[in-house]
Image (cartoon, rainbow, N blue to C red; front, side, top):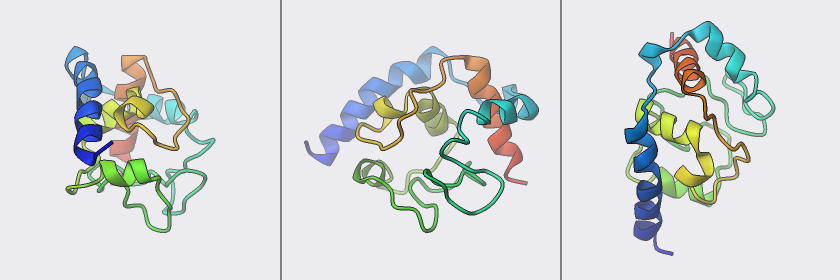
Length: 131
């Protein structure tokens, strides 16, 4: 499958998720998001610049996709990063809700968050890590 086809397939799958109910950090509670992030700590850290099984998520908002230092990303995630894509609220929301649909072939095994409040709270928590 060409990169163009893979990107278009990902967009076709992801667009309905985006338009049905976007969740953005301004709507969430960082303290509640820290609790939601507890589900992510099996593979990720957020308090430092070190990596775990997954890349560190400290400062994830606004960071270029597949750009955590000293982390080996899957070919699918590197392809998703093409063109300088960043982890903005839209991209994070899509990925948090459905990682394997947003980036087919990702190594991330998590099925995604279905609860809108959890997504908003997690984004608010990520925003609090920027400061």
